[in-house]
Length: 569
Image 1 (cartoon, rainbow, N blue to C red):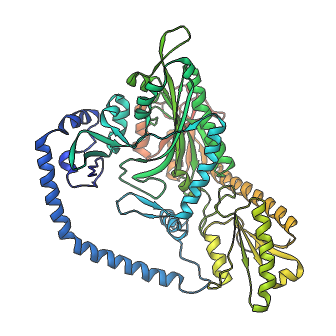
Image 2: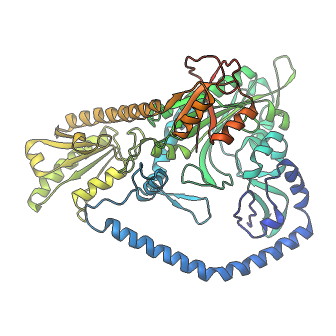
Image 3: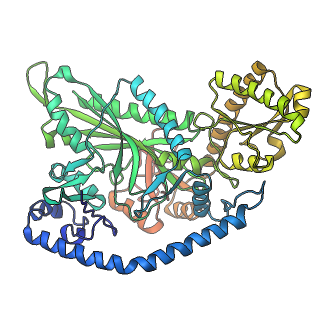
């Protein structure tokens, strides 16, 4: 298949500039794109552009190859300088020195992800994918416990589907990727590479829902989506990412609103109690709401650099998509009614949030309930004569931990020193490290080190080697670490939220990198003005409203709600 992608500076084929002149023009351009897609003249121009581009690419290849070889040599040199000796830690930029560089270093050195060959894409490596699998397993269980079923919808969506809902197409137009050719022929209608699935879901819901007996319809899908982002960061914002998207249909507006809030609370519970990420749950402003929704709700988390991260959203779609697609049902009185809907999603952005919430200068710090490896056991053997006793004790601990359901790993490799291993597993955020040496075996004890408490303060000596007592101690330690990470993150967040009563105070708070919280009754234009002046956006109106003056800090008008403003990812 030959794909033509628009909405960004990079295309999968050189013909996309001729065939798809850009998505920034919104629905008017999209309407014309359907008509233009069947033009023979456009096809000829596309072929000519493809030939020209091929020549240019061929001419650029030697230089590009040389540049790539130079970069690889520099990277190899850097690795040799950073980690040539056993026990030597790999270089991670300190958070306080350069947060962005620190984040990229952690993603690279912990082998969470790598850059894909297409600009803006990423390859999720096994350790990073294991984190995502943890997110999946917890959320999927919660979805099924609340009555939802998994399904899957096609990745390619007819462009005309998006045109049926005006606000939706306007909101997503700049991010769309289009396929205009397939099987060597120009398609009769361009296909959108899934940016989200409301349109194709409603196309199917209109066929599946006939009667009030078919409601509520509760569906979730795990999938990938494409949005043509200009500024990317692994896990946080990429051209392609993984997510789940829930789609439900209900008989009444009240049921749809109840579902919308219920699923946001599922996200909130996961973020706090599994990811140890304290979030603020609330309602988005009209400007920040999902394109095509009546209202959007969000969970907002504070990252280590104090920027906000939208970690999950839930949308009340009303009957907007139902009217566009004719999704109706016969009620008990035999009257046709439009369904009312919700949609909600969490993506691999959550993995980025976990990294930026908990990580420190040494690397990752993972909450035990999500960590792919909760405990690593490192035998310390200096003499062959000690090997049998030490490894025997380690095997007993391994069996006991696995029987108790603890995710653990034994590192008995001999090509690295214990010091190197300590640094490595500390960097990868393993919550507990257990050390077992010959003297420990003689005394019937071992050493446990907590990742959340650095240095000697985090080491516990005299931990019993007896399997039952050892497991009980480790399980209690994992619970303590889970609570400790949440408490640390919550304290950091609360210390960096400033209550403001004037616009000048908001400016000062945002300039200091903090969240500003204050009464708000401004208009959409006022909200845009704040963003233009400070680069801060209205993150949400929190569900849990604090006491306030009742006077908008921007307009001086009466205000019934407090809003949070901050810079964000």
